Structure formats: C-alpha cells, structure tokens
Amino acid sequence: MRGSFRSYLLFLLLPLLLVLHETVIHNRRHHTNNNAAADDDDLALALSTSSRWIVDDRKGGERVKLSCVNWVSHLDAAVAEGLSKQPVDVISKKIVEMGFNCVRFTYPLFLFTDDKLGSMTMRQSMMKLGLSGSIAGVQVNNPLLVDLPLVNVFQEVVSNLNENNVMIILDNHLSKPGWCCSDNDGNGFFGDLYFDPKVWIEGISRVASMFKGYNNVIGMSLRNELRGRRQNLKTWYKYMQIGAERVHAMNPNVLIIISGLNYDLDLSFLQTNPVSLSFSKKLVFEIHWYGFSDGDDWITGNANEVCGRVIDKIANNALFLLDQGYPLFVSEWGVDQSGTNDNDNRYLNCLLGWAAENDLDWTLWTLVGSYYYREGVIGMEETYGLLNWNWRELRNSSFLEKISPLQSPFQGLCMQSHSSSLGPCSNALELDYTQEKILIVKGTNYCIEASEMHTPVRVGVMCGDDSSTRWEAISASKMHLSSTDKNGNIVCLDIDSKNNIVTNDCKCLSKDYSCDPSSQWFKVINSTSFNIAPSPISISQRPILDGSISSS
Image (spheres, rainbow, N blue to C red):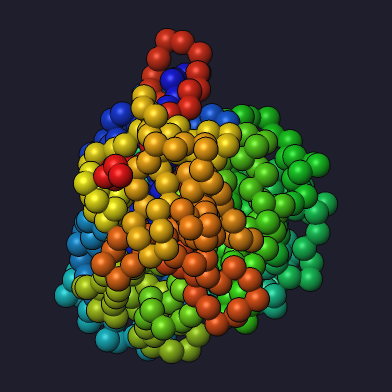
C-alpha cells in the first residue's frame, strides 16, 4: 500500500458522540458491483491485507473499514432469522440504511455436510420445530423461499445482500444447528461430539467453493468461539492451518479469518509462535468482547480501573497482532439495548474509546430482533438486537446514534467555532499536540487552556508558561483529560447539562464503585488518512480538534 498520511488529534467524548476517527479514504466507503453472483472472478471484491489494514487491491490499496452486523442463521431451523417478519430485501436495505457496510452471516456446518439437512425445505425444517406461525409469516413475506431447500435459502440471502452492495463474511458458528455456546455442547473444539475435524475441513471447503462467484463475499471465518476441555495449542495450530489452506485453495479471493481459544478471547500464544501458511495478505484474526466477558466487574469495580485492567488484558491477548502486521477484527461485541444494564453500559463506553483509538474493524451482535426458536422457546426476543421483536423498528435509536461514529469517518459532536459547546464537525481547528502535552493552534501562538472550575475551556496565549495549557490523560482508563486551572485546581474535561465542554473536579478516578465517570471520558485520537500516491509512505504530525473555540 502506498500513500501519504496526515495525523489528526480528535477529542472523543464516549457517551455523547464526540469525534470518533476512522482512517479516511478519499473515495469514502468502498462501493461494490451491483451484480449478484458472477462467474467472472474479476468482478469479485479483491480485498487483501496490508500490514494491519484491510485494503482494496482494485483501487491501489485503499483501506476498507468493515463496519458489520451479525445476522444469525445457525439456530435450530438452520435458516436466516427474520424471514417470517420482513422480506429479505427489506432487511438487506435496512442494514444499509443503518450505516453498516457488511454482514457476518452465521451458519451451522451440517447445513453443508449433511445432505439430508441441506435438502430439507424451510417449511419442513420449521414444521419439525412446531413453527406454524413462522411458516405463515414466511409465506407472506418471502413466499418464494418457503419451499426452497435450506442450502438454497442461505444462497438467496447471500445473493440479496450481494445485490444491495453489502459485503458478506461467512461464519461457521458451530456444527449442529442450535444456540451457541457452552463448554459441553459438543461443538466447542476439534474432536468434540459434533466437531469432527475431517467433516469440518470438508464443510468449510464446500462453502468456500460454493460462494466463489459471489462478488461481495469477502471473507470466511473458519470457526466461532473454540472452547472446552479439549482445547489445546497443538491441535489448534494443526487444524486451523489446514483449514486456512483448504479455504484459500478453494477460494483465493476471500479473507481468511481465524479465531483463538477460550470463546475467542485469547490469541496470546501468537506472540511467540505465529501461524505458518503458504499464502500471504489474506489473514485476519478475530476476537470477541462483551460486558459479560468480564463477569460483573463493571458494576462491582471502579469503571476506570476495570476499563484499564481489561484493555491491558486485551492488549496482551490480541491487540499485539496490530504491531505484528495483522488486522484484528472484533467480530462480536454488543450490549443489552434496553439501556438498563449498568454492567453493559459502562463496558460500552470503554469499548467505544478503545475501538476508536485503535481504528478496528468490527461486527455488532446482533441484527436479530427475535428468533424463530431458541433454546426451546418459540419467538424469543433478543434484547441485544438492533431491531425490535417484529423486525420493523429500532429497539433503541439512541444506541445506533451512539455507535454511528464508528461506521464512517469524522462524525460525531465537536467543539464549535464561537463557543465551547458540542455540535457538527464540519469545521476544524488544526492543532499540534506537543511532547509537553500542549494543544497548540497550528500556525499561531495560541493554545487550549483550562480557565476556571465549572467554566468552558478556551484559547489562550500563555502556552507552556502556565500549567493550565497542559493536558494529560490520567486515571487507569487513560480517558480523563486533566489540567490545572488558573486558580491551581486540578480539573478534568467534562460535559455540562447544556452540552458544553467545561472543566470540573475529576471524578470517579479510583475506588468508588458506584460512580459513573462517562461524562468525563474523552479520547485523544491520532487519526490518519491516506491516498494512492507514487511515493513511499510519509507521516507528518498535524493534530486537529474538530471545530474551534473562542479565544480569550
């Protein structure tokens, strides 16, 4: 990948959508061919990896950021959820409307290895589960699908996503259709009851071959959440490497996405022993992170301390892969969208800052508003779902607004031109962030300073001579931006009730488990942009604060 880089400094206030950065591509989001499955391989999206980035080879190495949502198709009925509620094309268009550019589409392995299952029609599969209501719904919303074999239904959904310019990652979620996951469900690791390595290799090879002609199928996730008492590194290396080679041989177009151990929380073993493959520039690693991954730590511990501790753990378990030159794909994360789960709410603020700072590719769990049949329950509602039970409206519109900055470059709320309030990020005040931690207005002698307690920050002229112009990330989370005001008080950036950026006493720094620090959680993010250029990569420091603030 060639290009020229510009570095920006952006303030991110996690709960209020301050600027979240993405590596900016001059043609913005990559648009794919409108045709459905095509036989000509030249029409396929030619995605590969360049160091830690996923890039488009057809456009000279422009970055493609994956902002995806999980669409479940691996449960007992072995069919994409929601087809009884909405036409497939309506669902695909809703995905695009919500700002996602890709879908992680899950499947059970046996759909492609058990001919009896694969040839069963959707109607027959649902009848076995007593889902007469779902059958009636599919007849209304997707009448052409109800009597197709399950394999063909899966293909039709992929084709429709393809037609709507949605990139697709095919995810082998488990072997036997059903809910995932537990240590003892027989799907956890090679050698388990339903996880014969030979059958698995054959199955993912069939999927790779079957979807070779679908130009928007850009990746295959080899296996979801390896786990259980059988897991061991020797077997992991053996079969993950064999599986990767087979999929690549069957479909060299797709990215090969590999998961780790312990429910996809641990890739730490790759620090000293990388995988050995015959191909290059196609390998991506994936991790999962939920609030419940950390138990109830977010409500029983201080949020700053928990955030710092968990991020340090993730750095050791997975984030190091960026420095090794591999993309890291957060293929599952999500929250209870009722908004009442404090554990999830505090985790979310930490995750958003971490994902923004590291500019990661990701997939939200989940699109699904309700399931045909899950764990013995017909019509179970999914509180982690973007859509409500009937798949028509958003479950929580404020949640989608909150995560939208992760989907596109330079969106959010920023300081405005003539005040310290938050608003659109259409203008930018260019800044240099110096080694002394001073925010200098580029090309001037002005800098950002803390004035007095409970008042807005402002532009001043005593840069470096006054501690009020130095800003440092403090607390275990490194998300409090602290300075000293004119009266010698140690203060932190905060948001007041009128949406102004002010300085207040730093809160919730440690120990207090009940305190919520989110209004004081900001991120200083160095953003890069790159073009195609006939020269080697060069890097220059040009931090900015989107918008500007009035001078004193």
